[in-house]
Amino acid sequence: MLHPSHSFRQTWELILILVTTYASVEVPLRLVMGYPAEGWILYLDFMVITIFGVDIIINFRTAIIVDGRLVSDPRTVAIKYLRGWFLIDFLAAVPFDLILIHSIGQPEADLARLISPTLLRALRMLRLIRLLRLVRLAQLLHRLGHRDLLNPAIMRLIFFGFWVSLIGHWVGCGWVAIGGIPDAPDPVTGYVRGIYWAFTTLTTVGYGDITPQTIHQTVYAIITMIVGAGMYGYIIGNVAHLLANIDVAKAHFRQKMENVNAFLRYRHIPAELQERIRNYYNYLWESRLGYDEFSFLKDLPRSLQMEVALSLNKDILERMPILKGAPAGLVREIVLNLSPQVFTPGDTIFHYGDPGREMYMISQGTVEVLGKSREHIATLSDGQFFGEVALLFHAPRNATVKAIDYCDIYSLDRQTFEEILNRYPQFASSVREMAENRKGKARSEQ
Ligand code: CMP
Image (cartoon, rainbow, N blue to C red; front, side, top):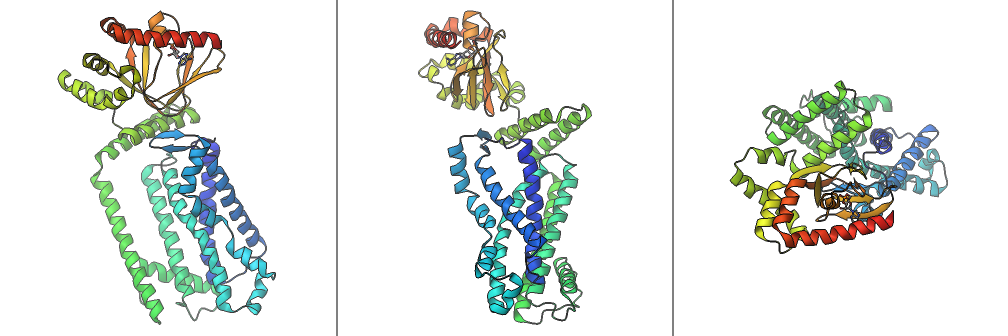
């Protein structure tokens, strides 16, 4: 399965942005200019369709992030995709217009003589289905905006210019299509005058030199004015939002990301490592709005720390089979001494043979236990623990443990672990039993 932030996937998304932009400009343009799909235009058409088709296959083969966790099981990925974007991607990838036009068996240029203009127009309109991809374009641009290619404010300005130009183009094409420019000497002049009308109307300038003549055009002009007013509202709303920084958490997080990015650039950190660091912060944002529990807890008085820690970690403790029915004192002791850690996919939590200083409890995520020669021993996930063998037997780590996806893990240091075992012999014996078992298994695997 392809990782969503793999460099191939990112390059592919850039190609998709270019191709979708081309389709969204060319499709309405061809409708109003009426030129046939021949020669290089036909080749470009095939290229667009092929890329959209290949994208469907790639989507089936790309792991997805659900609630901040990486899902790479092909079945789950396929089900999610089929239930989500598949229909849109599929409809946009099928060249209904080309199939129908070519099934008639005549070059497109000759069709005008064979079928009625209305039917030909309807056939060509089928091409508009390809514009369904625009919904995806918005999503791709949003992701591109998170990639720190440019200053975020400049990026937002570029996106804004992009959408305004695209909307102007469509509105202009629509105006030409409904006969808003009847006396144009040639299609290019007609198109340019259509765009001129679109921008004067959208920006509410309205010189009034091109006015609606029919009822359809009047309705179209009214809708365009409403869209134009809406766009203004949107711009003003956005600017106000930016200025007021209403979303404090986000502003705080963005500031932090800008500092991190500046540091990464300044110290020339390798691109792949930069990507992992950014992914880590994005995960922090998605899973806990960028707040760091540890420093938050540290500022509280001890009594409150206990209550907050209990409430924060209630879920993980309830999910740990080994703590089922454990005395309240034991749970409290563990809770107060847990330190949260986040690991990103592929991180090694510790290596075989490292000295053991702490044990770990998985709150969320999956880790892989690998033997001395990196052979797979086990997979552990939510509610399970690891790293206890080295502490119990005062031995080096008997396996390497790697994070498979984003993992929220709590660690418990050796001293607290030993104190707890001394104080709670029943708990100690179940941990020891499990450790003996694992130790034996790990040895027999090697
Ligand atoms: P430790 O030896 O401290 O570090 C490696 C950890 O991997 C080990 O503790 C166990 O917690 C865990 N581990 C080793 N073998 C197995 C196994 N067979 N099944 C599950 N976990 C294991």
